[in-house]
Length: 360
Image 1 (cartoon, rainbow, N blue to C red):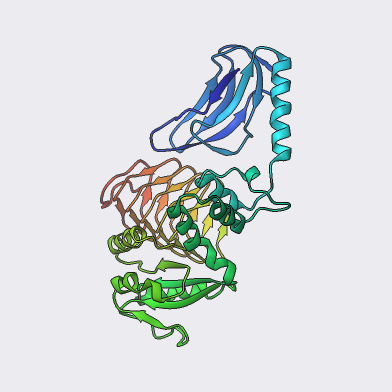
Image 2 (cartoon, rainbow, N blue to C red):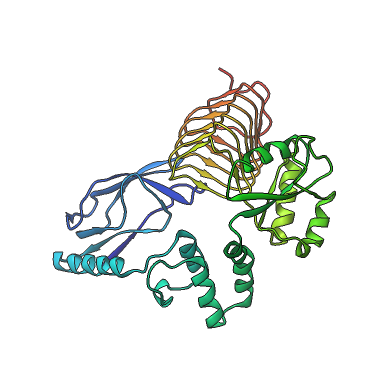
């Protein structure tokens, strides 16, 4: 059997998109024949076979996969291919059912779901119980307890907003629209007058929250700063280093494809659209009516002003600020620490501070 792995087409992407599959299961392929067509934000490539034989596929068209994923296997005989396929199918059928978060934690800590003896759906708490019984790594147990245990006791996610000012009002407006999220306090020097009095002011300084965290019952935090992105990044790193968990504040009117991957600590405003296959990393401020088209990659600590619009396969790297109404053409890369002023039309790759560059 020859195992085929998805190649890394460029250094900026850890995933590839399957544009087209040119063969079918059990088809006999010849050496140097085209098997699949791949794409990333910066490259397109046809993948040819280095072997002859009968193929069994592990992928689907129009899906995104990690680099080095085993996308197919080639066998010398048709019988070998069919036996392999039947064995894989049998394993899939027998695989226990589990929630998405249970699978995430099981993968993170090396637990086999079949070892968790349970009839029916395996949940996060089952993973926790399994760890406690097996007396595995205490640090991992503590991590799970911090991130999961409270959610079994309370129906709502209890959130602290870090940062006052107008950004606090925006985040408050987004989160208060959710029935399963509860703002339990605010940390910051300037609290907007329109914040309801039943949400307490906790501390002036961020360090006080770190020192007094054990005295407060909460699940996660969200940073509300939108003007000083360097300070926003500093706070995100500070709280991350102290093992705080972050939530996202996503306006209910945002239209986000189910195939989008979103990290933590993001604020996503009203009327935002995020297209199929896009990735949004951590601690970004995405203002109202931003349009992010398909297969974009948005890094971390980025601010996208109102009405920013990106075409397909755009990459925006960390610490960048994109002004109001900027339009970015397809497959453009915006480098780390870039600043693009409002109203620009970007038609080529860009790094650094923009003056009137790239304007049509």
